[in-house]
Every structure is written in structure tokens, then in C-alpha cells.
Length: 617
Image (cartoon, rainbow, N blue to C red; front, side, top):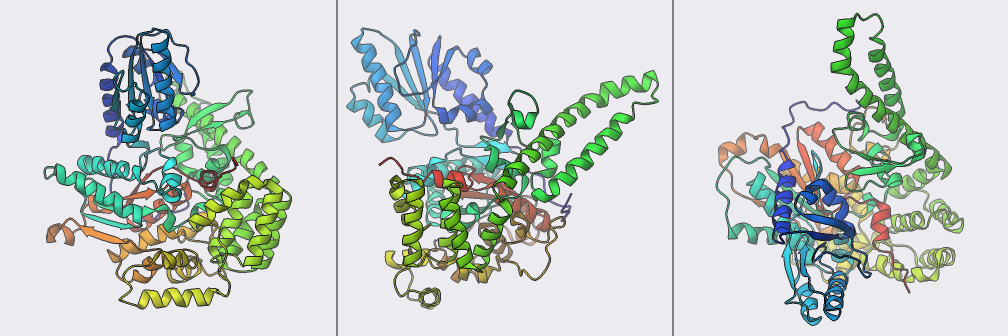
């Protein structure tokens, strides 16, 4: 379709092995509790579990009834209870209450807790405090990685973002390290590891410790290079409205664990339908990375082609008709069903986006990214808040304004905050505190202008003796860099030229030609330079912690890029958006790379901000 690029990209590794390993380990753990058992599953684990082992598989291993963990009294008559849960103290307390209630009632049962992805000492301490440690057996299901598609693997840990970046809770870093270790042992050894961010550095160190415990035997690698990046290196990109097809579907219908539920307005029936969105869906695979404005043209052309194939039946003799029915008809019907769904989804999205005056919203976002007409943007945001269009969208625009303008002027900050609290409730005071702590929505310090801030950071960067930023300067740097970084990395293409979205010329197409995602530009530049040379200032402005580690390949291999070295695994710690994945696919096609995206979770602006909401005063 829109972008051809290089044709010599290498083949991706087969990640179905990850699913088979996870399934085999789960079956082994269930068989540790022989006989009939009821299985209680954490709500967060239901969708991932469905992708690994369906109900039939569980029944084959003597699981009698399935229940969702709901933190209320249970009604199970089974003598054996198995709990498949995330390591959360609240859930462990609930299990301890069940055990103690059974003891009080004189009921004897066997209990097993399977923690996923790992068990934490705090959870075992709760069992001990509640006096049930000896009554419960515990284990862990090391299911770290769920392949959502040929090039997307998720840890399915949406809590990673808030726990790590807001609460400072680093317990999931070892999980990320273990996930890297698993990929390294199955598809490595990796030849080079690049990274930026505090969390990326810790995940790398955690992985190295595990590798040193058991070095793998030398073999032909399937993945050559790895890039680790923290979400807080680039908050701007996930806050922008998504306009590629897959991103829009996620924004409007919410893709969960690689599948989406389309309502009656899409299916044109009275029922909803759950649809898997991956490369197996031929229609979706051709439009997923396309700018939404190109999608209708493609779908109507596809419908015409399909009709032409159906029309071939006319004038066929019996033998030809028999061949057509046995070989082609089933595939055509399947394609027709998928085409109808995606046309329905596109129409539904079109209606919703027109209703919200989407073009005006995009214009405001583009002005913020370019740094133009800021007073008009503020007026638009005020109107958005006062009309109560959308609580999350209002917050998103406020954060974009703050990030791109390096903090708000004190009078603007106070005014916009007051209007937001009046519109959506005083309980969001805590949310503002969270956003401030993360540097997403902050007030400029009195007397600080952009140029003054930039020169301060510039001095700091050029000063060779200033090896590390102090906490004060770290927070100063956090709110003073987007404009400077954007300029240095040319993130905003020159607006004088007309941008043809049908034939994209760079990664900016994913945001209508207005902005190249910072995270993806950074990956592009580091790979081009084979390290951080020449990007030291940019890295420092992004709060540093950049690194590059070489595993020391032979000179022959360095001279000749093997297929494995053109396969790059990018791990986003804190989540990544479908728009970033589309941008990396485009970059891969242009440069002859194949990118594999490993992420703690798939996020968009709504998921990211919902994780920071604190309205329970």
C-alpha cells in the first residue's frame, strides 16, 4: 500500500514457542494439585490466560469450575482450591480470609496459590501474619511474555507504569530482566544492547546477573540488537491523538490483549463480536499502519476486487465451480466478513470523531507541538474544560501544553487548574499532585523563561565536571527540554511543504505529518550512529542514563551485517502505543530492519492518564 521501502528485510523469529512454554509450565503447576479443583483467576489474567490455555485445556487437567477473583466470600464445594493471581497484598489477604473461614467452619481443603509472573516476599509475609502460611502451598508461573502478533510481545503489566514511575516501586524491574533473559536464552545471544533511562539500566543489570548465573551455549542468534527505553524519556508521543488505523481502533474501542469487541453499530447485527486483531486478518494487516484518511479508499477498492472474484462464478462449468467452491469460496467469505467489520469500524470511528470536532482538536495539538498560537490553544483548552467534553481529553491537552511549553506560567497554571477542578470535581487535586510529581503538568518557576532554562541546561551539559545531575536540576531538566530536543532531533517537519499522507516520507505520517515521535527518532539516530556519540547533549536533556554495551562480535560479523543483526528488539518500560509500533514498522521498511516491540503493556493517552487518576479523597 502506501510505503514500499526496502525488500530485503530479514525474517522474524517464531515466538509461538513462548506460548507453548507458558502453557506447559501452567499444566505442570496444575498437576501439582492432583484431582478435581476449582480455579480462581485474577481479572487481569483472564485475557492473557485465554491466549495461552483455553477452558478445554484446563478441564483436561481436572479443573472443575472457573471463577473470577472478586474479593468477596466464595461458594465452592470443591475440596481443592487453586488461585492464579498477581502478587497483590489485598488478594493474598482475601485468600487468607477464605482459609481462616474454612478453619472456623471445620472444613478441610487443600489450597494452592500460583503467583504470576513471580511471587514477592511481601505476599508470603501476609500469609504468615494471617496464620495460614502452613496451610497454603505457593508457586510461581514464570509467564512473562505474551506474543500479541508476529512483532509485538507484551508483559501485560499495565501497573508497571504507575508503580515504577509514580510510586518508585521497582519490583517489576526484575520481571523485565527475567523477560529479557528468556528472550536471550531462546533467541540470542544478543550482540549489542543500547538503552536510555534509569529503569532501562536497572532492567539491563538485572538481566546481566541472570545471564552470568548460567551462560548459554554458543549458537546462531535470531535477534541481534536490543534497545531498552523508559516511558518517561518521551511522554509527549503517547499523549498525542492517534490517527493510524490500529491506534484509532485502540483509542475508541480499546484493544485488550490483542483482541477488540465491536458493538452492534459495527457488526450491523444485534450482537457484539470479539475479533482478534493481528497479521492473520489479511484486511486489517494491510490497513493497520495506514493514516486513517487513506483507509476508506483502500477498503472500497478491496470491496470491488472481492466482487470481481465472486463474479468469476458466472459462466463456469460444473468442474470449475467445484474447484472454486472447494478452494476459493471459504477464503472469499472470510475476507468478506472481515472487510464488512473493518468498514463498520471505520464508519463508527468517523461518526465519533466528527462529533467531537476532531479536526479542531488535532489542529490544537499540532500548534502545541510546533509552539505556535499558544494563547489560542489555551483558549481552546479552557473551552474544552468548561464544556466538559471529556475529563481525560482535557487532562491530556493540559499535559501536552505543559510538556511542550516547559511548564505553564503560574497564572495560567492556577487558572486552568481551578477551571478543571470546578468542571470535574475537587477530588482531582490528588491527580494534579501525581502529574506534577511525574513532570507531566507543572508550573514554571517565577522568573524562569524558556531561554533561561535552556541556557542553564546547556551550561550543565557542556560542563564536563557535572557528571551527575542533582535532584533539583533533574526536576528542572524534566520540564525544560521538549522544545530544545525537538529542535535538535528535527521532530517537527517544516510546515511550508505539503505532506502527502498516501506516500509518507518519514515517521511523521503517523501524526498527519506534524510530528516524528521522539522515542522512535531516538532509536533511529542511535542505530544510525551505532551508539550515543553526538547525542550526548540530547541524552542529558532527557535525564541521561544512556548506555551501549557490546557483546564483542568477531570482526567478520561486524563487517557483514547478518540477518540477526538487522532484527532489533525494542523494549519499552512503562508501555508503548500502537502509533509508535507503526512508526517503527515504517522505519524498518525504509532501512531494511525488522523491529520486535516488547512492552510492559500497550498504552494510549487514556490508559496512561487513568493510571495516574487519584479521585478517591
